[in-house]
Length: 280
Image 1: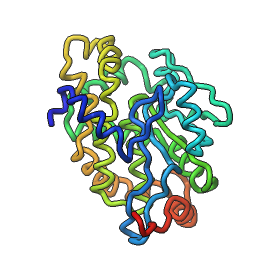
Image 2: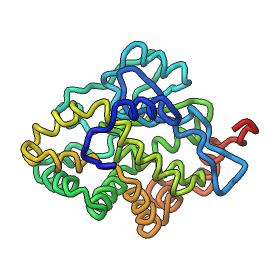
Image 3: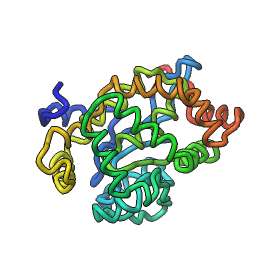
Image 4: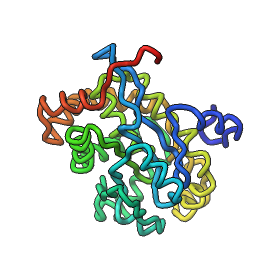
């Protein structure tokens, strides 16, 4: 499958109609992190509808808001920066009965022209090593945001949440991977989930390209623009190895960078896992 070419619409429609994708009108790339088997507790799976991931929610419709509420979501964690929200004119939605929290990974100063030029240069290469550098920046900057999400799972085991960035790929993919890893989900399943953004982003392909065309680096280079949105399975496998080597894995990161204890990690795992029903 060529990362840079449009996908067959029938194929996209079929994949989007099945787990882990969830249809939320006005939002793309919505996935449930539930129903993944744990390798550390083989009789358990992650709970469905407790933790969702997506792209930005700014275009959510009234029907979409009602759907989120029906799924039991009580909190939205927005990982985007102020700069992104202003630049793309994509404000936070108001959803009655659901709290929408700003939890930016990067601060405004991280979006200086110099920083953005360097970040776009890395993205445009599409190389695994470049993504590791980018993902280490996300890990180093995202402690407050990621800690807030993990503490929600620790403290609110019956209240669903959804977290998102702009496309629902990198920042979203990293916290999703860490949550699944803490529950003992296999690296293969985590990498498969990450790679599904290739399909999940497809309905917004034209909008994404239009946004990127306004960036000088991408204006006349479609391949560089699409490289930014590659989501190859091997990239996530490399990231999980990188996380183990440089941060002590998901648990090490949670303890050292987020200030969580062994007991906190145990509680998060217990809250997010359930006994696998016999019919699954």
